[in-house]
Length: 483
Image 1 (spheres, one colour):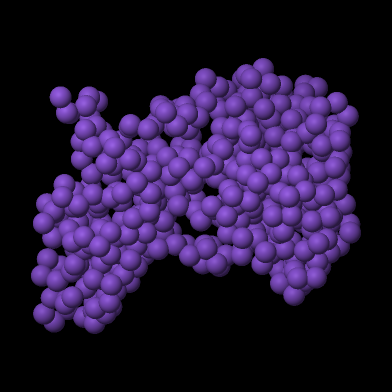
Image 2 (tube, rainbow, N blue to C red; image 1 turned 90 degrees about the horizontal axis):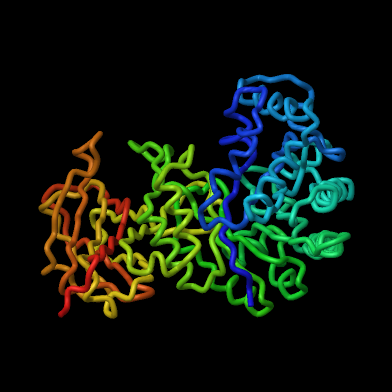
């Protein structure tokens, strides 16, 4: 049976080495572990590198800013914090591993696979280089992983293969993928044999991959073969740099394939509900209700655990609550949830991972537009516990005189109570929030379809309607309402 894990990831820098003033106190060095202690987190994953160096005193790889040239204060702090521990005879990575074990957590070191600090930058595939076709690149990554798995008392390693395109160059050039996908599989096989067969206990091999089979195949990852051969002990699907929470990744193919071989799947949960790239928005962290909705949907799909990162820092009471609830489906089953429909970004489109929103409807487009909504709650079975269900939509350029039909699973919402609000506090004129109080028409457990048809725009309006957000809110009573 696949192993359940509740995972939190720290990337070594943003909320750790970059923020503390050197010299680093031991209490500060323990922070990444201690902020998860007392929650459901049983596995801590630490991102040990980025393309310009590793965040520990490696004997193999180039250490981050080892040239001691610091173009910004965070880089100065990172290097000096590491060095301040080394000067006291403490290895920064060992400090974290020991603290994780003291707190009852598994420790896995995550490496961004690809070009790293000590390798030739001319091999970057974006610049026409050979990338992972270069034996030297493959060997350097292998040697770093061997150091992390054998020379350190870690519980295993994670192959971060999903960092490109935003946080690294692709492993292969597009023209090399078809021929050399077996080369990548052979390299993963060699890493697996090394970590699984290390002296002492068998090490864990995890892999970050892309959410769709097509995307993995397109970049040279034969994930199904890795699963069939037992080369990886878990897989985590994600699109890196798409950090808005996505509770509907199309990963059923991965769950089904992994479970054939008892390999667990732990989807990565984006920490935000909005990002700065969106007009008139600042970065907003997902609420516990939004996180619950994502947990519930993924558990309903059959995942074996959840993987979180980048919570509001320092991790506050809401974050602690989420880290506690994400370890137990029963804790969220009858609690209020806030489901979001996914919004596309530049990186999701680049990776061929197409999300439903925003959805544009031209002024003369009278066709029906369908938006999928997945709900894990058993609406019918819990009717006596559910206080209310609302669907909210943010629609840009909407005016009250527009003639629009809204349907849920083919049933019109025209008789449901509707409320309207300004679209945004900054540019209130820009759109409207529509909120439907669902009484006669309610969503089903599982897949639902929200349909929108623009019958006719208000007289003289030729602007495009844009469905920016779709949210489903399920609120529960503390007691059953039926005697």
